[in-house]
Image: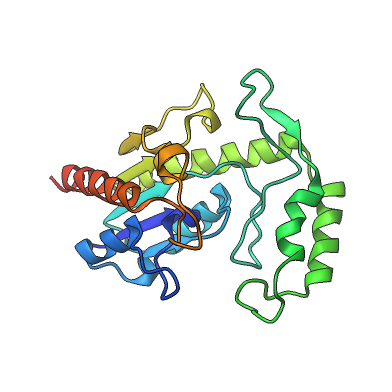
Length: 230
């Protein structure tokens, strides 16, 4: 069965530095999935998911981990949160200012000797990103692009009749939107985000979710897969 998984770093597979398997590893072994069947990126944006989804010609089943609002950066394998982002602790004022410097800290600390992490000139990239945020970004624009990609993903899998498992973070989905396709799960969000009891470290496991959490996610997804196969 040709299953494809789309999402952020929660969908990462293990490497030799971190031997604990993630749920992506467990599902890959269970359903014979290759690396090409798993599309994940750090801070992976909704637009990146849409971009990769539409490039794949044959999908028997899609598992989509819908993102938090992020800026799609097609020239790297990392997307970035903007300087204005959701405030999860204040549901009446979802958009708040966050210093841009905190978002660029990761980039500034990148070891430029590894082109797979940042294949561009670091200083040039930082300057370009700062100018983009100054001249081509507003909170409303970012929100509309996020919603637009969300709607297009749902419409695409519906039109293509692709059985789909949607895993989403409830506070990021607008009240006026309802998925028209597949199975929708909001309950696993804390687990695959590595929050609370599910939190581990990236040094120990590739998606920073506890081994128990990864097993729980894998078992639940396998249950959904079997339902959609019938």
